[in-house]
Length: 328
Image 1 (cartoon, rainbow, N blue to C red):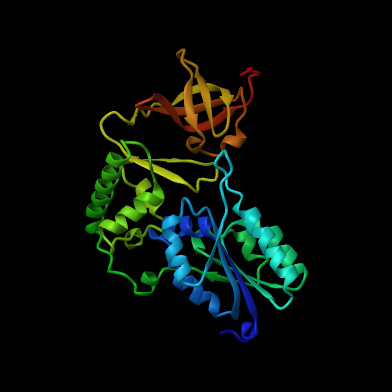
Image 2 (cartoon, rainbow, N blue to C red):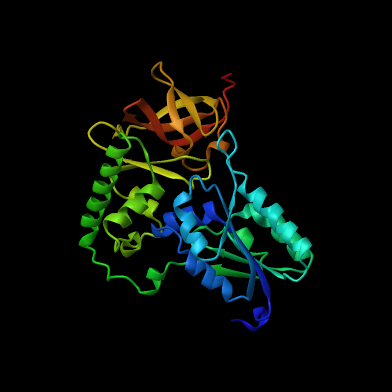
């Protein structure tokens, strides 16, 4: 234990959703709660350790969390399915620190920059703040204001894994595709969440890891497999969905075209082609050389198209001229 933390009294607050999905996306496995507890013990005496989550969705984690002495705190989703976990955690942390002056250190298990106001307030009253997070998902803004960062890595990372065999990459990709197809059958051929894919891969082969093939994240491996199509379920591109591609489900036409943006909504829009009548749908993830926030109704764009089961979509969208003055 570092000398500066030797006599610290520590409160640990865990953002279960952040840690759960971070470990799944980066390591294709669920969090090792005992490893998290052991890491926190290195920084003083743990006076309180709480995990905040929607325990309806994370019910399978409750028993293991409690076995490791962690108190689960239920945070329900709103009626529209949104989480207010960061608000619950922040209020609980501030309440604890103001009511108990003997606790001098917060260990926050999350890489989310939304906790910056909490960290700033605790630092202002003289408390130490340590972040525990998966390195790939840790906001750089957090690292600038905390006293220390504890990088979370699974125990399997310490063992080095098996040597990389380039010839095995095709077999691994085939294994991933076969696993995804199996999940699609279970989900009636709908898009499958990346976390679900990661868990199923580990279930079928506990030794499988995308990092053996030099991919930092599982999503990068999936994106590199021609038979797999990806989309993202939120603007921050943190929740990925995937499905396999067969036949003409996603046939790329490849020809560069030109058109005008006629509508933009929450994460998607429509292009009126210069040639043709029907407007073409596009998703925000298909914009290149910028983001959808850089586009406005009336902008002239270049794009290519690909055919999906729902019709023709646009991709490789790039602005070439600004606003024609079109009203959506």
